[in-house]
Amino acid sequence: MQFDIDKNGQFSDIFLKLRKIILSFKDVREQKNPKQTAYYDKYSAICFLRGNEEKFTLAFAKGAILEKEYPVLQGEGKVVRHLYFYEVSDVDEVLVREIIQETMILNMESYELKKLRCNSVKL
Image (cartoon, rainbow, N blue to C red; front, top):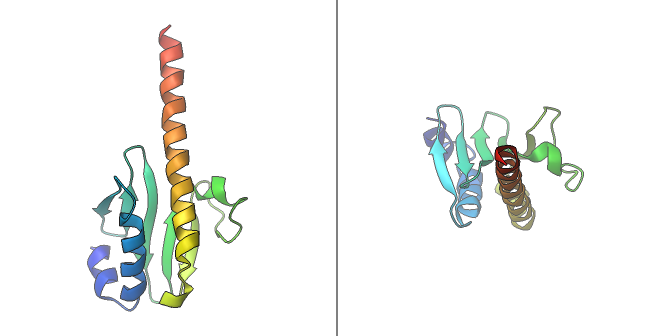
């Protein structure tokens, strides 16, 4: 599992710091997957952690929506954007908390909009 690799690997200090920040939010659950450690709230995915030989990656599930507000996010995929870390001192806890909070707000808004659409179809 990637969790075990990251917990004991080259970037373990970064992994443990980010994990502590993420799990400090109420109702966030952790899911250990073969290729990454994922974090979810009750609505949807929040973010994913994964290290490799060169850097440690924090990927945000709603990153593409947030990149205008947070231009430090990198990537060109349809949905996800990333922050990359090379040393534990690279972790800006205030920024990471802010982006997680915004992601959780977007998750809730998206869920509520879907609920409203379903209810309006039934009327």
